[in-house]
Length: 634
Image 1 (spheres, rainbow, N blue to C red):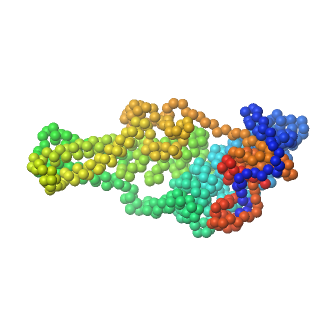
Image 2: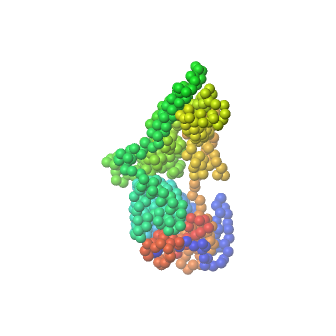
Image 3: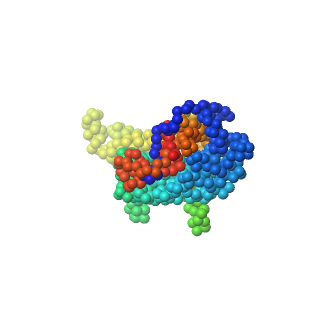
């Protein structure tokens, strides 16, 4: 495709001279022997060496407004490494914040590569154009999405009104890029900002198409949960749906997920139809009918049965106690089914009073969860920043606080506000089944008219106590399932953990301690967990112990001479003569303007879904996410 990115395994050095390594000030840097490599404004800017930068500019008269041999500016190198002091100095001494290199990329584009928010703030305050596009139509929001820099994206959109849904020259929005790269947090933020899920690029591909092509299951999950049935049916220019593309690329898990999602959505009826309203009742009416039928059978065939002796006072009390407990369980069943489980109010903005350039996210700009980088708490459907332990229920289509699970038998979610009712319902019904089952078994076994021989007794019980035996069989199977569920719920309550958290323990970062081992920060001990739940009806989301604070600082991008990058991302910077080069660690960008032909599913001469998976160019473009790979800029 035109101007495509080629991911290469290693950088070919133009000479084999060995580089000397020097370490100082807590930063390790491998710098070549050439004096020009150590004594230019570009190196000083990249390392944030303000003293050297001042000497070069003020004493030796070096210019900070001129590009180097490849057309990159000193301000871009400072921006890439988040060198705020160096960037401020360069701007004060003539550096142009909107100066573009040979690809049209500005320092702000380079800020987006590593998420250098501090330098970006300086540039924007000094007049940098937040929506400046390079020769491929990439704005800062595209680059941030390509590298998964969610915090940077959040900053420029909420504070500087950057366009979060602008297409590039190929019609691809930041959501396309985030979906292609599999950056789920970026996708959540973009969807929260109402990015168009079904925007089609020049090849007819939506973000879901690109996620399917790359086999990004989490990206597909985020898009499907935030979308509609129609999103799964969109076809590209070759007539293929996302599921078909995933199958064509042999991404079986993604293809199965997308196909299953479409089948489930096809089964859903129109929300306004009578059948749909009936289906939303779930299995609750069936369970209600079953419990009442069992109670009537128990009363008629066990307690008041004419072919069994009358009950004495004590045994009658126990027998009717089972009925009382089951009836109380029905009351709790109704409460659990009809009660708000902890739905979080959806954020519906006033579109009439909202300005055109005001992002929806401004409503939640100071939310501590977002400031801390907890992007998984964004709900693109409800448009809220939900609590950490909340989850969006796809069945109820609402976010539920302390989401435990969606129970089809009560046709409702089990969450913070109705878990006490649900647990009490289980306790009452288990107790009732235990008592009624015991009474029934005792009544049948002590029938004075029953023969003593076992075979004859079975024949007698089968003929004379059909109702009691039927009740006993159903009661046994129901008791087995409900008792197991009750024990599981009691265990989770004692540890202050939900069913959802137990199921997704490997996915939720807040449940991981040192070394990636399981750690429940909300477990205050069995006694306190149980007492709080029984008294309050729920447990507060208060973490116990000290929280580990992890900072995500911007580290140094090392510059080496004639050596392949090791980790991270970066650019190759070298003079035209090829004798010296500055290689910024990690991905080096190789811009190839020659159209290449690959085998596989090809949209056109500019789009390829084959095994080589050629994609449009970006700045470093996050296309070599493996630390051992690099992308060379030439």
